[in-house]
Length: 175
Image 1 (spheres, rainbow, N blue to C red):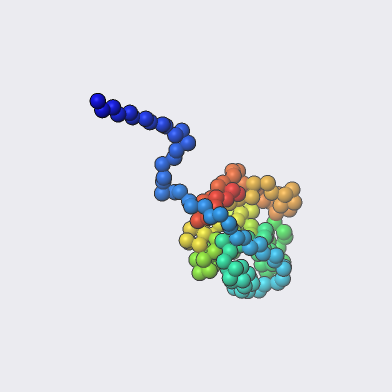
Image 2 (image 1 turned 120 degrees about the horizontal axis):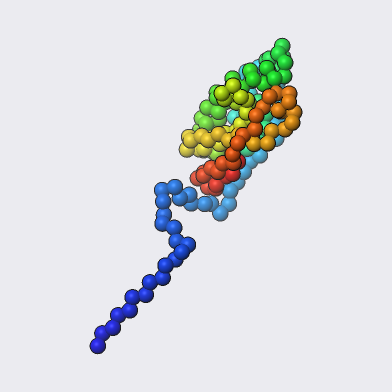
C-alpha cells in the first residue's frame, strides 16, 4: 500500500521578490563635509570647492557624501544691496543649477550625494530643501519640516509638510 502526505505551511512573513527590492549592504561608508564659509564670486567657484570634497571622499570608496545646511550661503553676498528676505529669495535662483551640477558629480564620481540645504522657491513660497543625488543619476528633493523661528521671521521660509523615505543602492533613507 502506498501513502502520500501533503504538508503545507503558510509563511505569513513571506514577501515575494519585487523589482524595487534593494539588496542592503552590511557596511555603508559616509563622508561628512566640514565646510569653511568663504566668499565665492560665482557658482563655478563654489563648485570648485564642492568637487574637491566629492573627489576626496569618493577616493575612500564612500557610498554617501553629506554637505551642510546653507553651504551656498556665500552666494548671497552678491545681493548685499537687498534686505535679508530679498537676498535669500534671489539666492534661490541658483538652486536648480546647483542640483543639476551635484547630479553630474554623483554620476561622475560614483557616489550618492546628499546636498546641503538651500532656498527653493515654489508657488511664491520659499522652502529650505536638499536633494538626494544618486550615483545612478536619479534625484529626489526633501523639504526641511521644522524651520527655525528666524528662518520664518527674517527670511519668510515655510516648513515642509511630510516626511519621506528614499531607497538607494545600499540603504533606505528617511528625511
